[in-house]
Length: 219
Image 1 (spheres, rainbow, N blue to C red):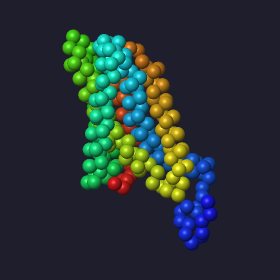
Image 2 (cartoon, rainbow, N blue to C red; image 1 turned 135 degrees about the horizontal axis):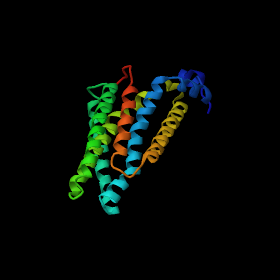
Image 3 (cartoon, helix red, strand yellow; image 1 turned 45 degrees about the vertical axis):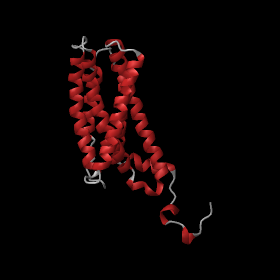
Image 4 (spheres, one colour; image 1 turned 90 degrees about the horizontal axis):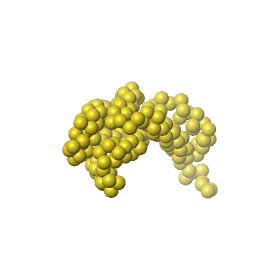
């Protein structure tokens, strides 16, 4: 469209090619950190949905409809996490909340490992076994989608306001590739036992602790 020079925003007038934006984005460590954090939480959820049918249907002998109702718990955890994160960001920086979320997810992954083992020593008590798995999983979703994903997405592209669409395309493509690889990795290590998924989550959390943003971001 046609714009008069005196009404054209200076930042919009500085057009950048997709190649230059992607090249710069690829060399910014902070962008890769945030891409990993977004991918890791989404990867946890994708891996859960890839692995959980083997745990709940094959091992705990739930019906398909019973297994499907467990998704309500995941949805409620995501909603309450988002509302809590939105409230806390008014008094804390986004970086503080991301760090808190990753540290809490690391501890919860350890609880999930213990819970998965306990669940398969409680096969005669189905509700108890479900709780051992679902409660830690809901905690991961609560902190992941309430404290990590929204603020990582918000902070990732602050330096690209004059080429936000192109930068977002590259950033989104990067973390979706990571999600794909994480989900593929879950498939590779699947052995039908209860410990593969939580151990995989623990490894992902250790990497996430190393990828935590080092500089303070705006609230």
